[in-house]
Amino acid sequence: MAQAGHPRRGSAARRLIALLPGQPILRVSAVVALIGASVTAAHNAVNELERAGVLKQVTVGRRNRAWEAVGLLALVDEFERRLARPEPGPDRPARPAPFLN
Image 1 (cartoon, rainbow, N blue to C red):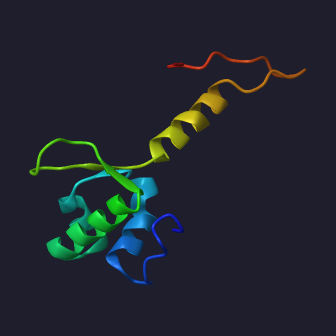
Image 2 (image 1 turned 180 degrees about the horizontal axis):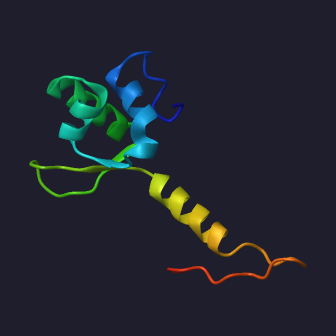
């Protein structure tokens, strides 16, 4: 919330932030459906969060654009890696982690 500049309570941007963990990649049409906002309010929320660095456009062009919640997928990937490869201990062997970079 701080990175977004603390959007006002009830604003489309604030409602969208709360839903990003469940929808880390989205289009404006999804924002409209998720938060029940108008298309204009959804565009404004996405633009506000993009300016704040919370969202990043991941498609090219002006039509059918999609945005990603910056850093959220990386957090999930890191969490999955830690689950797959815990530190070995006396009662638990280390397991190989899939998709290591």
